[in-house]
Amino acid sequence: MTRFVTQLDDYSCGPVAILNAAKFYNFNFTIKKDLKRLKEKCHCEPKHGSYHKDIDLALRDELCNVQIDSYPYPLNVGFNEIKEHFKSNGTMLFSFGYKEKKKVFGHIIFVSKYRSKSFLVHNKEQSSSEWISFKTMKRLLSSHCIEEDGTEYPHIWLLNKKEKHDD
Image (cartoon, rainbow, N blue to C red; front, side):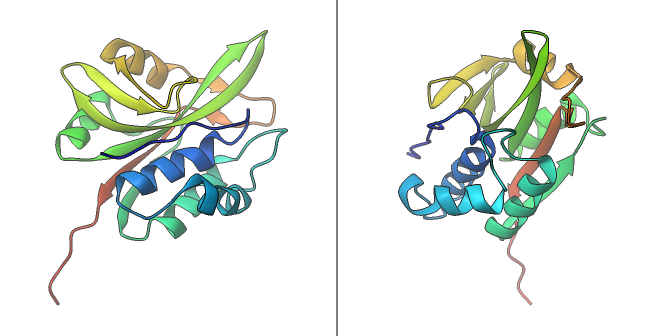
């Protein structure tokens, strides 16, 4: 069973989401060995965390045998397509915005499973893994927010193991 991790600070959710995706796809990643490098690769800083473009580049560089489809806001993929993606053993990195004291913040989680109207997410709150309802996921996917720096939410990356081809 994969042991997923939770971020240890307020700003490294992007690198932690990549780390959790790597662990899911059987890369030999650990917090101790890889988190610092992932933070650097994602240009992760306390002031703003990581930008989507840096997450995208790091994902593609680190998870070389994983198919990655990026969908920035406005999402050009429907909720039913996302459910079907999970039914075909896909996973997702999901960046969503939320408001706190009239300010927009972002958070990135790794989503590994869909079953019976709920999704298994990693690093959403203080727990490393929890199930969230179909309704909650749909609300998060449809919540459009813009940070002061122009970062728009939501943004998703659909991930799936690349099939090996005999050449």
